Image (cartoon, rainbow, N blue to C red; front, side):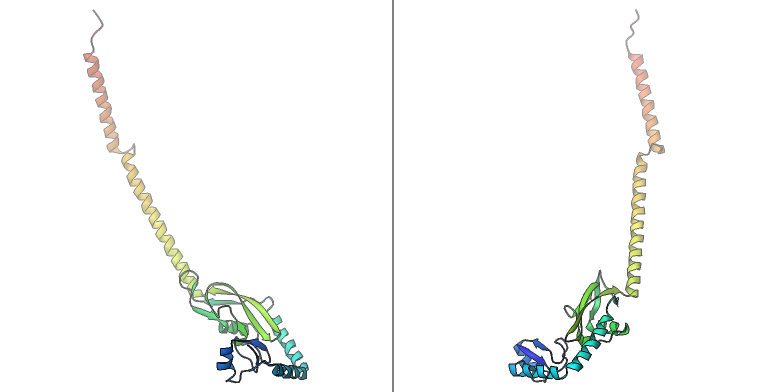
Length: 218
């Protein structure tokens, strides 16, 4: 059902904005708390009259909102987070974290006016949020989630350890291959002695064969 916001409501919009919500949510939460009124033809007509009466004020608010939105052009925001395995975060990042970063960068914004897909972010990467400064001023803003200094250091140390272990394994494999190959090395004394003994045996066999061969002389 359509309702008219009587004030700014996080996750829904700004005062005087007409939005669509689930009937149960409206009847059980929004209407009892005076946050909205049902968008009946009568209420919509009254809304338009109010907006017309404050037309000059609304124009001023829109201009101010557009000026704030312009500050997002070219702005680079990198939110640092503690990282666990791979790109998974310890904890999560939400609209409050982005709002805080934007305020530090000189962009005045409340977290309730920032919408992050899924409401929370749990992995490193590039993301885009809806940043609203007014009912009629909304900007898609891209930002990055990057590992913090402690996570970077831990990753570097882990990579160094893996490299050292790999080097040790390679050296062990090389040594094992060298030792195995030494048994067949022609310079190996044992192999050389065996070869010499075999050669002597062949000479003796040849001499015996020569002595036993029948003579062709008469």
